[in-house]
Length: 134
Ligand SMILES: [Zn+2]
Image (cartoon, rainbow, N blue to C red; front, side, top):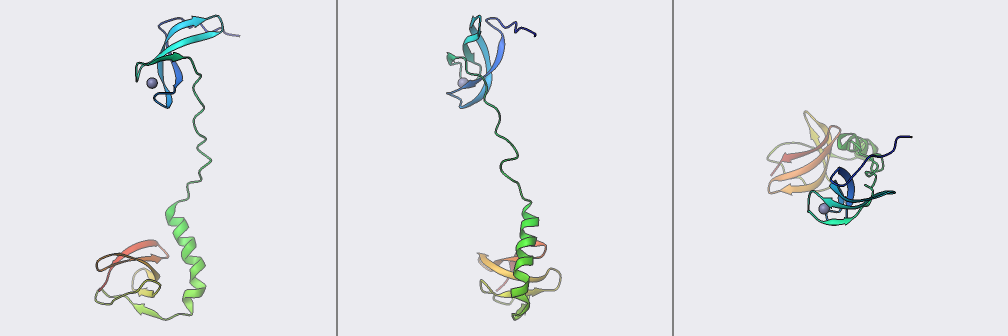
């Protein structure tokens, strides 16, 4: 077993409650058990040594590629969209939320929301796109 050879003045990573994160500290006082008091390099606050907390597990929040999620959403909507009337896309056509668009390049799309004046947000197989319209 390798014993820690820390002494006062040594840099150490510790949890700072002021900074609310793990920051670099300097050991201010040592005991036989380990660092007793540390000073935060970030906020210069002195406090009892707290071991750094483990970083939040990166795998907990699943990061789904929005493109994949949008394609899946589109595929789930497709059976319902197939039976409905589609309007060929043109910049001079007015589209309502919930209506279907037939785009020469992107294919069938569902108008999901109004993206602003003369713009609609449309879900295509390729993902969401903002389209100009009337
Ligand atoms: Zn701090």
